[in-house]
Length: 442
Ligand code: HSE
Image 1 (cartoon, protein in one colour):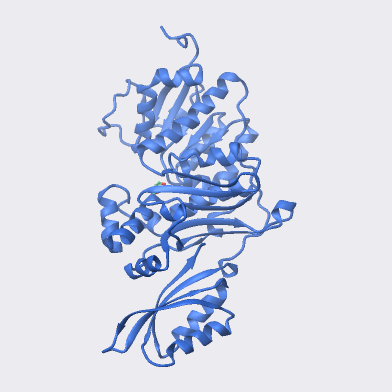
Image 2 (image 1 turned 45 degrees about the horizontal axis):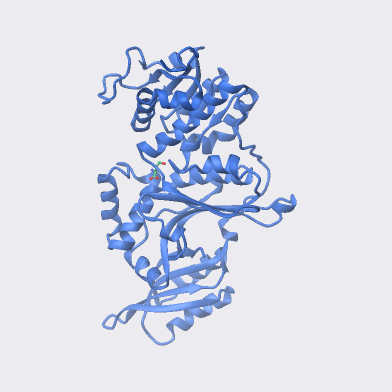
């Protein structure tokens, strides 16, 4: 007989029983003693909301657990914790509001809802003396949200630099290491179940924008809304970009970066800049070596310095790990007394910089006429915009057509000046095509 049998269980309502929901249900049903041991009393799956109860789930659920009516969870006074793993904004956000308004603690894996509505939901939770945990919303099994909200909370953060989309990182790794072109690598990611049938959210960077919005909010305690984050997808990259980047000592990764300018440490408003785009990063850095479906988040704190967390960012196991970890924390706190309120006091004030103000090094790839004086014309345009050239590679010359491809890297320059230069260069008769403008994140 276990020592928890007399304790009243913590009743859980699960919203969604898909890949992650199935993992959470399985953990609760198949490891009840291990979880009860961590919490101090049983954690009981009372109800699970599904759309289609007839679907074969490869999971033995006790009779009466499955429901198609959200009110069976939201209005049940015996359920004290609601776990949401439906994904998407609606109806998930509505259910979360309903759960918090009804006095239930919440665990969610929903990055879209936390990015778009997180501050309001966190306020609602605090007003009602409830906790709202969302570790699984960013980086699957990587405990970055717990770190930013608790273990590293004493720091003022200057930057968050991350690879937080496994699908794009898989595609870019295949393009870099095996010279697989973009559409083939994407098809392969879909076959392996990394990319969805409609890959827009991953490939165009929306998924990473939601996750960066959450991380930046926690790191800087300021709201960085998804629409404040500059976004570029990976669909325009070509194999040549990887070849030249490699020759220059760089990897190409889809990076999600948020930085805060100096001044914030003195209490002044340090403006924030946030962006998701494919960029060059030195091959010999830790982020430059993150390959395949792995994720990594690197933060730079005033006390801890640089900290990097690396691991599996998605999938049933890692996401279940984060969701059940949050659930255990809430259930444990319910056992010991009042539940702590959620971290992440997020202010609306403060300035957000436009991408035009970004200052970094650039990698530019152009097709040009291979004739005397062509490079000088391009160099003049860059010089007039105060852009200093760091290196020039001339490649893939076609003597018959008298064309060549050039790759120019620059010293730190302003984004608006680089964009203006490329517009002017595109008007030159000797420039056939501007293939790439990529930032170099040293
Ligand atoms: N589609 C995401 C990724 C996982 O590829 O990383 C869920 O956030």
